[in-house]
Structures are given as C-alpha cells and as structure tokens.
Image 1 (cartoon, rainbow, N blue to C red):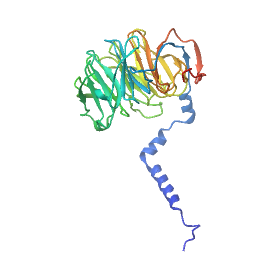
Image 2: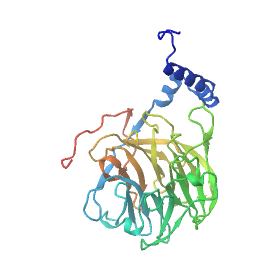
Image 3: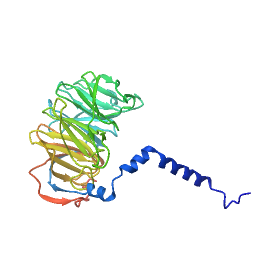
Image 4: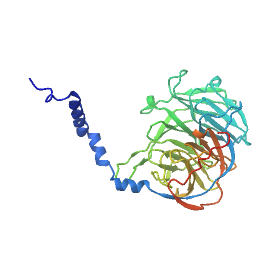
Length: 363
C-alpha cells in the first residue's frame, strides 16, 4: 500500500495537467513569443505632453425634470437645431439640451428607449440609437426615431460574420447617408446603407508595438465631422484612424501608453475642422488630448483626475458643437462639462500632474 505521504495530491495532478495544457497550447506559445521585453514595454508606456488649461464655461448636471444626472455616458449633437443629446445609461434616458444648455426634453421607456448607448442625428432630424439587450427586446439593435422622437423602426443587424453577437456601441452618419456602427469587442466597424442593410466592414490593421503581430483593431468610437471625414477610435490600440468621405485612409494618430501624451483607454473622439483640431478623451488617464487636424500629431492635453471644474473622473465621450464648445461626459462626477480650449500649450509636465482633489461645496 502506498503511504499517504507518497500518494500524489489530486490538486497537484490537476495543476501539472493544466500547466502542460497551457505549455502545449499553440495560442499560448504564440502569446509568449509575442511578449515584449519589460524594458521595451516600459519605454513604450512612458511619455510627456504639453498641457493647456481649458476654460470651463458651464456644467450640465440636471435633466429636464430637475433631477441630478446619474451616469452620462454618450453624447450627440444636432447641428440643424444646435441641440445636445446626453445619454444617461443608468436611468435609460436621453436628455436634449437647447443651445443655451437648458434641458428641454427627454426620451425614456415610453418612447422605446430601453438600453441606450451611442446615437447620431441625420440632416432630417431622425435619431439613430444603439440599444443593447433588455427585458423588452433580447436582441441588440438600432432604433430609429423621427424628428418628433417617435419610433419609426428597429434595425436588427444581419448579413455579416458575427452579426448574431454584434452589440452596437456607437454610430455616426456620413455625408452620403451611410451609417457607421461600432460594436462592443468587434474588430473594425460595419457600414450600413440608409435602410440599415449591411454594405461592408471597415477594419484598419495595426499593432500594439513593432514586436507584436498586426491585427484588425477593435473600434470603440466613430465620428464624422462637418467636412465628411470619418474618425475611428481604438481603445485597444490607443490609436485613431482618419478616412476621407469616400472611406479612403488618410492617416492615424495617438500612441498606446499610460504616460503623458499617450492613450491608455481612449473612449471618445470628435474633430473641429474650423479650429483644425481633433479631440480624444482618455477614460483611464482622466484627460482630454488634442491633435493636429491635418497630421494627427499631438499638440497638447488637459485635465487629470479630480472633482473641480476642468478635472475629470473617468470621462467617456466628447463632442463639439457649431460654436466650438467642447462637451465631455464626466462619468463618475455625474455631469457633462462644457469647455473652451484657448491658446496653445503652456507647460510641459510628465505623467500624473497633481490633480485637484478638493470637493465642490455641493458634493
């Protein structure tokens, strides 16, 4: 009889077998091969950036019923009416603000808004809203509302690989009426016609560092500016990709990393052709980064983690209006900040400038 001291533990056997499995797994072997050295990774993540101080011109923190915003997550702008749309995902509502930032209207379950995400407004005032699963509809879809906020139809995505698992996250409308839609965890974005029929997938290929293999980028956000240029933002790659109105690739910008001037987890992008600037908000670094419109090169950044105006607590989206005002969803501060970025860079600071941790009086 084998002594209990010599009998191998079943947990030890399981650990050994799991170790052999991962060692022999091709994907794991490839992952080990693709790993970057610690020194190279550290170098890639470091960085400095010029900083500018934004002018905070307003704080939006209440809806049309006078209640505090909960978690404002997505933004859209209607240039025809100069109205701002704010999606409060926690409440499942869309609040519309007038040009003077007064809340004038909201949409909720009574109008067919159940699990809202990103949205866009076309030239006729129609609203295209990405919606996730809910108790009212188990299939992710795009809901279309007319200019009176009455639902016209739902678009259920089909006709492409992975359609059954595609969860729309953000949407933009091209000058030709095409719909550009990103999906959660989806590589590239899908292009639809005006009726919601699949046309193709637009998927830039990139790599995290020169040592890692090239692959199609997961696209987190999409934006179309007033000149028709299309912007694809990848949280995964820490990069944005710019196309002309005909979907011809122009250039890319941004660099992955946690240091100053780098993109750790970028969530939202927009652009101002008049000021020749591209804006990106970084969810993890709590900053806004500003890039040159023609080259994609970094100009400066602003913000940092804090609670006072001009500081952010996990910003999730950014939008520009016809007046050049910048809107940023300050998610965990439960507000939308309205900013003007004046002038150029003022100082050069490394990663983690000292933030403002002074709480507002009403906090």
